[in-house]
Picture 1 (cartoon, rainbow, N blue to C red):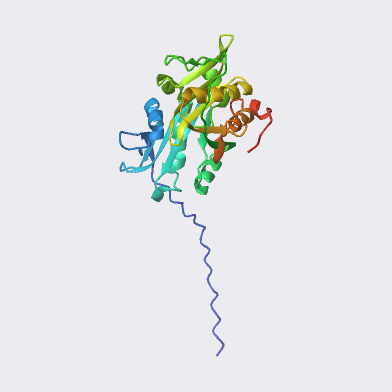
Picture 2: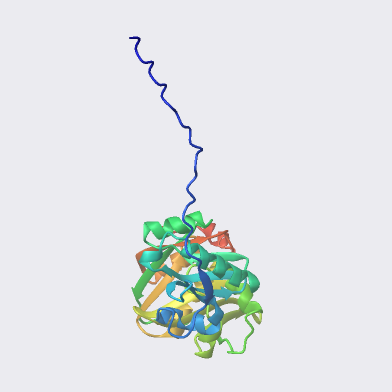
Length: 293
């Protein structure tokens, strides 16, 4: 009996099926309501002056997923905080908050974004992917200084609380803004903590001070030339009074760094500023040479 022929094996070619990636749940971004944003004393004034810059991300059920705080100063959007709850990270919530903050800034004329670099590598990588890059290194410095007195013929002028931020204060501010907290000139002027140094009746340097965790915080200091900023530093410390001072300076501000060293300031920590592009005229300081910490 002849053998039964073997049945051919049937091969079935299935069409490739692409399994759609799971889309993250819809996220809505809106201005924060009272009590929704985390309390932060450093951001209190920025939130008061830019209330719509504090944003929250919520899901369809209204649950908070994260928050961001931004403030517009002249033509820069300063991102003060961005936080996403751990369970919702990596799902686009941070990107949505950043995009909303950028839109908030653009609607108010901001052309650049600045943010202090986070220490967490994951958060740092997030900002790099978002198009930001390293802008400058900031030196945090402290000193104990006593016996300072203005030289003969030197006078500082208190800036009026009503001085326009769009006049010469803004012009000076643009020289060095971006290496510390938002420039709250108006707030400090109301407290009587903003002074100018004039030459020929025209302001050539501007400085502010305010109480800080390590004594009196000096700065920001802005000037039309590096030497003007350096000359103002000891005068500002003398006017502010006290003994223990703190100061934050960008690495490019060589003239100011030299002036700080002459007063006994010592660097205690560093931080990095991220930005979309270089702004201001910090290159003026780079050519003044001198001490490198």
